Image 1: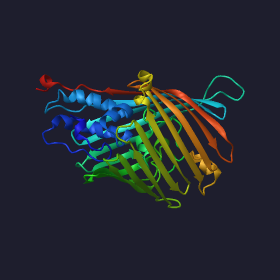
Image 2: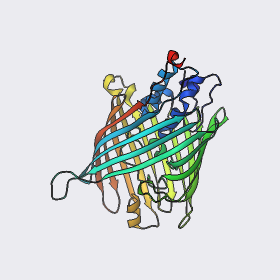
Image 3: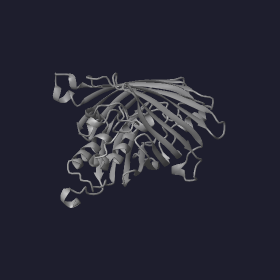
Image 4: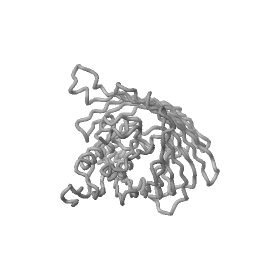
Length: 396
């Protein structure tokens, strides 16, 4: 019922019928969860690959079956947990992180949503001894959304900067194909504190358009919620026939050197084949580069089908070119200090609906030195309704 109403699950808003009160009751939480994993998917692929949306649909569809006109949405606590071992150039780092997400719908048009990140990176000292290291705590976003109509949602507060697609759609450990970040991820993706307008609409039967426009203020003086002054936007077009999305991003810094940055992105999921291909390019004063990655689910293999249908093989190639800010500044931003090329290959195994194991190998090449990168670990996602959806008798 629910899935048949969605043509493009992304920034394009769903048109809801006037009499469909059950769908209306949960649309705020659903739209919020799409913030993490927006892409051109069928509902079956969303349930399988985008954990945030998949779990929410399971809860929502159960609620819809008992919904009444007086039913109200409930807050939801969701998020992910990851424990990984990263071996880079022979040095091992144990990375443990939890990313709780709180969704609080208010009425039919308002939603409060927030995500925090608690991450510990533990490493053995050079002289030996137990693992130890810092634990980083910060707020990724804390925002208020107002759904003005089917085409516009207004957001105020701290939000993920919609530059490219990885930062908003693919960052959570459960959703991403490979756990190591793309080299260009730090380019223009620091969180924004300000106002954003986003939405989408069909431009024809063959294409839907999605957009995001935003402005960010300066830092408010709190370390965990720092930001910069900038303005920018992103626009994309999704073609339902070939199942392709293409788009571009732009951002202008309104402080210091007032530089421009731009980028391009694409995604493709061919019908009938469990394949996903996506790519990003970014160019800024800090540097430029690209990444291209693909993932193929081995569900079509008949040999050892019970195991292969849970197995996904992935690959990514990427390159980064340093900018004009110098090696120390690049390193401070989390960017490579020299021109870098990298190739990664990995395997994901889905033990069940909320737990997957990951393993990957990569090789990085740069004038600073060539080295191997290994990663192993587990990613888990959860969703807990913080309330009770009333049934027909209780609603009366």
